[in-house]
Image (cartoon, rainbow, N blue to C red; front, side, top):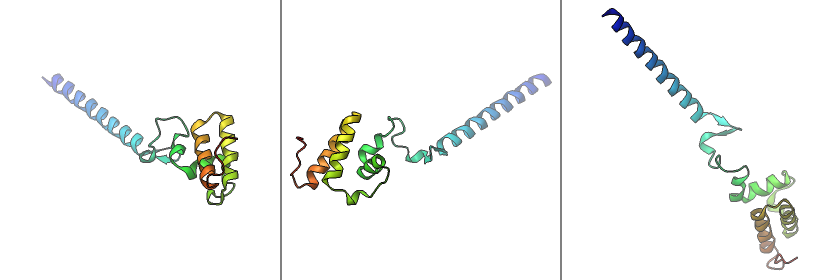
Length: 114
């Protein structure tokens, strides 16, 4: 009878340790950061790198230019340059957006035809 009680206590002990370890690892992985971003802010973590830039114009151009100057200072020429840059890289959505911004800022003078 005594060995049965010891076996039961050992099983309970192992189960408790397993549960404690599982909770600890879950808490760690769900609350720590990845590449400097908290897990709660990683909306695009399962997408290819750079996807979040498609939804944020300021991030897109600042990332492309390395913060050379603020996007508020940009005119149609800068957007045309970036459109060509993105076309060469094969990044269609980025190029389209840059061309669209150039069209808007030129008041319709630039239509993307050349």
